[in-house]
Length: 441
Image (cartoon, rainbow, N blue to C red; front, side, top):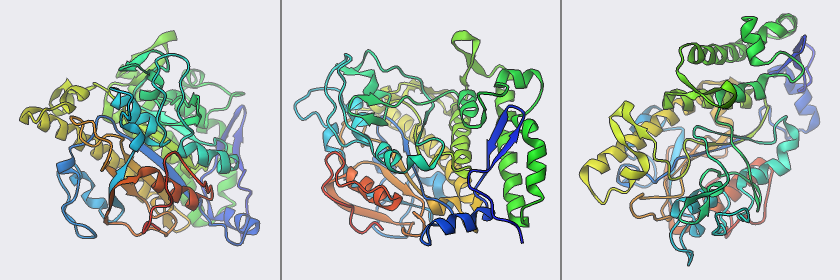
């Protein structure tokens, strides 16, 4: 019989500390706090892609279960029992509503807020608090980081990025308040140091000079703790620490092979491979969930209106450019390839979540993950009938593998209110919400 551990237990060493994953040894402590508390917490994540999606290759032709996957969703075939497609959801305040052009900026600004952003390219930006930050305000005190904001494309918060709209709107989906977008971290090394570093210990460059992993500094404590754990917890601890070391090795290889750009101050930048970038950021999001460093995350694969090219899949034109396809067959095919490439990266993240075990369940069982964007067809710039994928079982409350169709025009924010309820962060209203999404949980 092993003694229960405190959830705040850390692996410590000289100038270093590493949080622990969710272990069965914590269960008695968690249960004593509340007989209703789960042994593993619920998490929520919002993964955003820009410029719309090839809707004819996205929307299933059949309602309910047993639907066929279009080309864009085919990479998720092995996960079809772990996600559902929600059709008909809308962000009304991403439409112009008298404000003229600027659909890209509005689509990202309104995606998690349901609020019409003020049209300005100056400092007087105004939007609304986002769903992730509503959750962070209520449950964020339970973790080291109330929320985590990550992405794969840099972007400033000043200047005009879309027809008179501030860049803050195009480059942010998370808003702490009406006037405060939350900056996202796009640098993998900086994110790793934020999650697993210690301000009082050696920084990443010093560790590299010593040719040491951050785990080397807490090794003695890890060995001591391992002897106090049961077999299943030992396995989980080993897998978690292996995951941290794997991230370090991948970062070191990217840097030593000169596969990352250099930015100001000669600091390492981001991986040159977009797929590598998405996957390493996704892996760190999962590690942060494992260690209960946060329970809320937003992840922008790219900024809204992004014109990144995808030469690795044969698309040399920019994403935004081909999204304005005008029914041109060549551009439609390029857009389909980009959308499919994005879902290939999503499939990687979902499989990692599914394969990560905690307290006898998959981490995906304790997740609510939304993937999609604020534009349907990039050529039409419409914001109704949005491409929305919902993954995870919300602690057992959601039956996956369905195509659920709502009346077109149903506020997307109704979905978020339902998710907030499940997170224990109930809100009466969010942006243009009209109530909870029926038939969801």
